[in-house]
Length: 123
Length: 112
Image 1: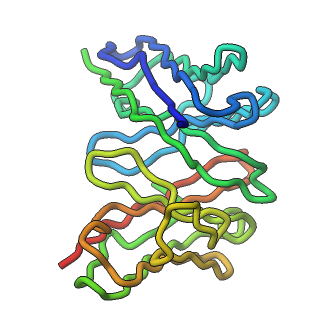
Image 2: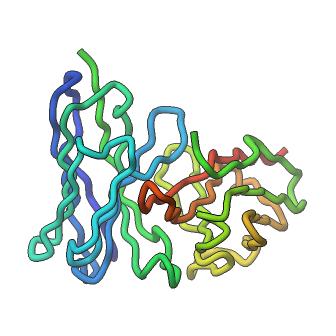
């Protein structure tokens, strides 16, 4: 059974830092691209970042570029999101999401999502 | 502000057909595949459609996707009470600012 379990969320002051983790199981982690997607309370979905299976390609949303860093450890089947210079508008549930394939040929979509971890940014 | 525009709401009675539109541009829908997600209240999103019109295993054939030019649509036929949820279209957008995955503004479907 595919499982994605996020951790590391919590309350942080504006300007602070937080590191999210996602533990993957039930599939060959090293064969899949991974993404972080967030959702502010009562709002829609917002893609945050992408990392390819071998970490060769990394992309960020403009809203987090220069502040967030995505990484992965295939040996430990883990995905990470280092967040710094946090702002009130970064408060959201952060989801770890699996994806397979190349976007130009068409991927199989964001087919598995974790349960999410809540990040609250407040003084 | 998303570059993919959806109607904020849609509704129908049980058994009816509901269609949700998703309007984009040449750099996203016009040149890449469209995906659709369903988010039931209080849960993580669930993939409904990938590559414009493909259904993952387990997704009922009541859900269908289509794309034409810079727009896409999700149709729900034989509407059921359990279809009451938020629906999002999404696409990879390779514009000048780089590659981004963009979600639509979302449509709340209500079963009357």
